[in-house]
Amino acid sequence: MADGWRLFWRTVGVFAYRDLTIQYRTLYRGLAWFLVQQALYVGLFAVFLEGIFGRGRTAEAGAAPYWLYVYSGIVIWQFFAKAISRAMTSLTDQRAILSRVRVSVPAIPVAAVAACTVELAVSLVMLAIALAATGAGQIDAAQIFTGILALLLFCICTAAIGMLLAVANVWIEELRHVFPVLLQLWFFLTPVVYFPDAAPEALRWVFKINPVSEFLEVFRSIALSSSQIDGKFGLFALCGAAYVVVSAGISYLAFREASLSDRL
Image 1 (cartoon, rainbow, N blue to C red):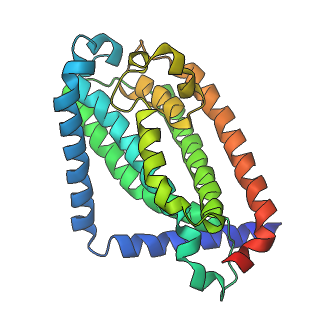
Image 2 (image 1 turned 45 degrees about the vertical axis):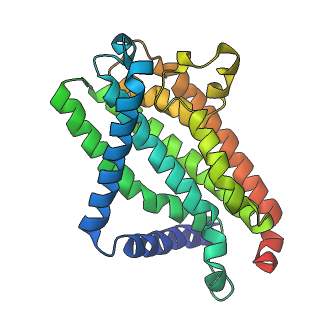
């Protein structure tokens, strides 16, 4: 068991470092382009959707303007979308290495998610600067602890979803072609740029089974200091989602692992 965990974490470290060195051969240029893309997304959504969702809704976003509500959603969504997309193709992309080197197979999609946390960390720093500049966030030590716990649970959920998709992508070759459409649908079913109560009441149950929605509820209740957003239920729901998704990911991988190497 101990040797298995050592191999797992060694594989995560090696492949995460490899992904980062490939992705950021020119570190500053890569991060700068990422932040420019993020700013463009926030600007476009804030300009075109503020008249629909933002007008008269400042109380529901706490003291923050609508563009900060959008910014907080874009930061989390971009990490999640990029992480699970990279994790999904991680096993097939490393097919040549898997056939020659002994590695921990579950660690490879986890490493793909871990590599994306660098951009998430940079985005969170930029968001914190924006919140401080506007005076929208008043965060105490307890909220910081809750936020770190929620972020850890969300990263675990993301890694587990990535693990499920990585194995499914080995067996379903068409998945990589269908996945961008499914990801776009997931985006619209997540309150990234709109308030949850703007959705039809008959569809709001989707938010309760969507781990991204649950984390956004907790994250915004802390970052935007909003008394109108209840993050307590979201934290408990996120704990449940992390347990269910991780259990499903491990079970599915254990079921398929014996024949996975032959399939690759």
